[in-house]
Amino acid sequence: MNKVEQEKLFNELSKYEFNILQKEQIRLGLKNNVEVSIYAKPEYNCLQMQQIRYGLEDNLDVSIYFEPEFDYQQMAQIRRGLQSGVDVTIYFNPEFEARKMEQIRLGLENNIDVSVYVRPEFNWMQMEEVRKGLNRNLDILIYARPEFDYRQMEEIRLGLEQGLNVELYLNPNIKWQEMEKIRLELGSNNE
Image 1: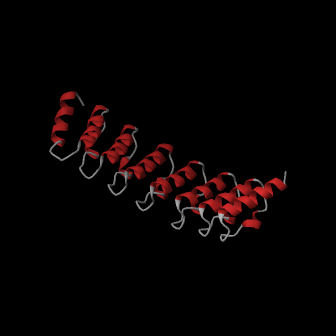
Image 2: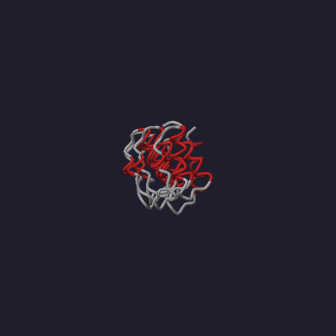
Image 3: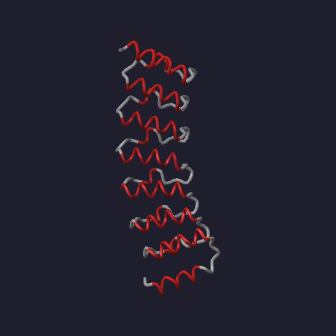
């Protein structure tokens, strides 16, 4: 598309009410020869437009994530998953916050069975602890339970990594600080 055509399209799109940041995303898309009509819509904020533009620039199928109900951070996680070639349909859900999507994406990129931690009762930090345990081939079923908060999960995971008997503090009623104290004592006894 030449400059005259770009300017004509930009002027035509200007009949919509876009703020200066949205207009900048449209201009950047025109400059980079992407199909701006896909995202040059008032229902997208500038950050959503940016994520769609990035996907178009990378020749990704943005139709997977260009729904306005996804915020820009969710769009970014879906776009990154598409870039890395993982099955984004596993986390393609506007109800998943972006940080949960990220934990699922990271697991998929490492060929982990994410079904163990794709559970609505887990927050993203709990998901991260389960993912880290799976990455290290630990028996995560010991601690992948919603009654443990993420700090408790971390202490159990660290104990498993050190080969400690975590049964001594495997109790959701024990605060993470106490778990850490027990873990450190067990670790110093093993040295």
